[in-house]
Image (cartoon, rainbow, N blue to C red; front, side, top):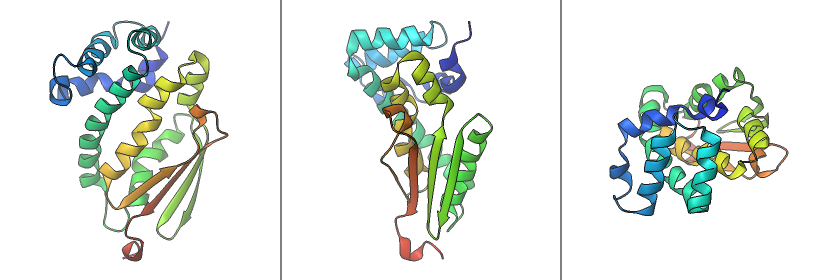
Length: 189
């Protein structure tokens, strides 16, 4: 049977080589133990079982530790992507083109409303949400996917402010991503 989590989150395994756990959490800490168990089980065990076992052993702290680790990794990764892809004054559009446009091909249904200096995305279908619905691991999916939006966006460009008040994984009818320039008066320059 195919591990659906690895389809969406297999990229996480690569992060452990680029970003050693010891650089993020001190050895002996609960977070270090959680990340070590997560790293060692990812791609070896069934991921759904691994996540359930981590939750049983550590509670909500397990998902939060993984999210905190991913925040560090994604902050560095997306800062590099931003240096390569973000143009002055086109950062929002560049971010959408790098992150969101390819996701349409993966089954995401979204609309984009653009205004001067901002863009609002409304996601009504998300394969990652579908995975949460099939497994019941909504909290884990939030930590692994949804929460990362708060780290990738400012790393890509500190000029972009991100907000979201609805998330499919949390039971809403859509995800309502909003991107605007922090320095609105110079956004069009």
